[in-house]
Image (cartoon, rainbow, N blue to C red; front, side):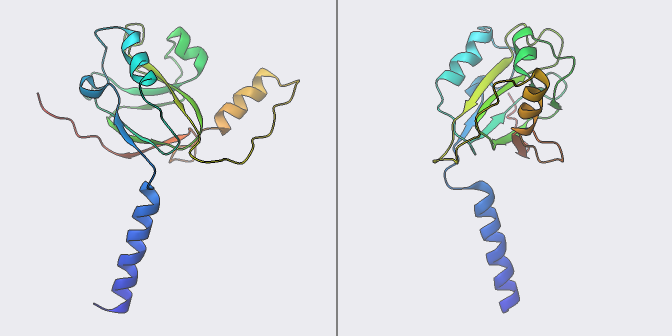
Length: 175
């Protein structure tokens, strides 16, 4: 092999290593249940989230049947009220998502009745190492300022920033 080919292979290997990171854990949301209307209601996904210590860069697989569920990022207020009319972003296909920012992400399904039947999850991602200190919020912060900070605190692969990125489609096992 020529020097150019070896350099290209090395560059690709380094890029793949940096993309996946060494400290990222991988989980399937809902384990064998996947992402669906849970038989135990909202407590099912709340218990799943409580049982996992998630950190920035972890990868979560959301497995579901296309056309029967979706995955939407919503605000806390919309999460609490199961308001899916204006999600921040919606994914119509299953996949693996890497969460890039510290904080709580509120995810649900936008199909009618799914959120109220428990298909929603709040996931907190802790920092991986000693992060640089965040600036303290202003005492006179308005609701609009808080919304702007929330939008800026998340990052997505596209030009919009949502705090996580879809990395690959999830594998759906046939039953």
